[in-house]
Image (cartoon, rainbow, N blue to C red; front, side, top):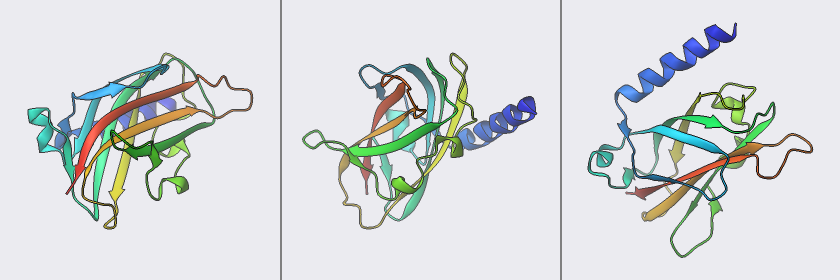
Amino acid sequence: MSIFVLTVVGLMFAASAVNAEQVNKFRMCQNTQCEVYDVFIDPCPEALNNKACELQQNMNASITFKYKPKFGSTLPKTRLYVGTVLSPDLEFPLMDMYTNACLYTSCPMVKDTEQIWLFSLFVPKYYPKFSYIVKFKFWNDEPNAPSNDQCCFKFDVRIV
């Protein structure tokens, strides 16, 4: 069964990456316990020139990436934060309803195993047109999990 699930997830990754652009200009957060690579955002033609993705208000964008956590979890949680150079991280609107990481990746999350993350981001119309730093974070939310069991990376977007 797990081979079937991995095959389906792999095909979904390939299909979603066909029209997406690879974002090379992302950075890992400090003290993160994972590797992140092959980050694709659709739409993001700006990535071809290593510029911030321009996301339209009232539209969806898909974010797909591969990762290898240095921790495992049967209960992973996730949050998406948005901020500017001068302001702290704020939770992205509507994200509080979708903190179950198993909605976006295969579970359980297996330590030192490459996995794929598929996420659809809705940019609300009321979100101000501005340049932002998006922080993508997920962690082990099991009872007694070490606080450093987390993965985090950042990338730039511009809402237009």
